Amino acid sequence: MKLTLKIWRQKNAQDKGAIVEYPIDGIEPDMSFLEMLDVLNDQLINKGDEPVAFDHDCREGICGMCSLFINGEAHGPDRGVTTCQLHMRMFKDGDTIFIEPFRAKAFPVIKDLVVDRSSFDRIQHAGGFISVNTSGNTIDANTIPIDKHDADKAFDAAACIGCGACVATCKNSSAMLFVSAKVSQYALLPQGKVEAVDRVLNMVHQMDLEGFGNCTNTGACEIECPKGISLENIARMNREYLAASLKG
Amino acid sequence: MAQSALLNASILKKVAMALSGLFLITFLALHVSLNLISVFSENVFNEASHFMGYNPLIQFVMQPVLAFGVIFHFVMGFVLTIQNRNARPIGYAKYNGAANASWTSRNMIISGLVILAFLGLHFYDFWFPEIGYKYVAGTAPDATRYYGELVHKFHDPIRTGLYCVSFILLGLHLWHGFSSSLQSMGMHNKYSRFLSKVGYGYAVVVPALFVIIALFHHFNN
Image (cartoon, rainbow over the protein chains, first blue to last red):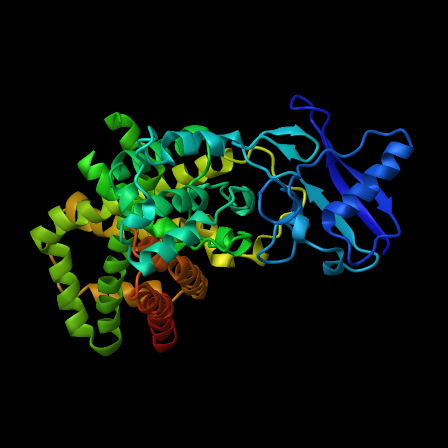
């Protein structure tokens, strides 16, 4: 395949950055998108140019590290996949492909296509956990009976890998799908109910402090989420937040 | 958590937006019902309009509440839109919004601005003259004038056309607004899908009735 890549290049966080065009040839349809970028970087290095910086880690669709906004969509045109699981067969020979970093005030660009998603970590630190005694007498979670329906929904919410595609694709840069998944995975389980009020209040407060936008229920986040996190979680978080506001 | 932080919380702003929207949706049902009377009976329309125009509860309680609801919904809409734009200071070179969200959900501010412009025209046509008639000029009540005023306004084809276009945009706004308000208030259960369908029906029927009424008076008089 012969392609034209239009890639966002930015030396550092202070640099203004711009789209730079790179023609590329010899791309196999079975290559993953990241492998295609590896090929480009090999060519750039051989020419003595600076390779394109992009995030990646497991390359198995598990870690959520790879980001990229490809041809106007988070993780590209395929559904239910991260960028590392996107294959070049989704494109046609001769295509022009725009590759940009995830854009949001809360996800500042570090270099080229690499963005700082530590705002998600700070939201997690604000309440995305349960406090347990780890002094040696921890109770096995399996000893607590949990309704299968609730356990399944909590597990679905816990499938969120925190990749940030929801923020990147949302026209408002809202982090509601991510935060709601983290709130839901605990809210549905008995272990999470003890700290439920503080959790939702603190996590939403941190989300607002980070500068994410407001959810307008377009549903784009659900469609682009590689793990299929449902909008149902946002509704649940709204309920949790309203109830917590009255209690707290 | 501090009370001020709670009051500024994004979720509470969205809930307030949803509640004001649902309030205005309820008002629209009342408004279209009254307008619909004009198609069937001049006298009953005059009576109903006179009641609405001179009942103290409606004039001095409901009308200010409605005005507050309208102003709040628009101001909050602008506030949220500005916040949302600030949340992405640098936009994408290529953004394919149509790939994952409907036009109506992505352009609520556009349909909202058209409705705001329409409200200006509507107030200029009906509300300001009504206030002038009753409270500035102090003219004696006349329970027979309303139908004539309505018909007179819809005589102009440009005005009728503007009204119809605005009603279509109102329909698009409602198409997303109804189900979105339920989601914002935390509703997502076995009734949600049914209620969303009710919302889609409402978004078609109510604006369509407004259009039909406008066209009826334009072509009938």
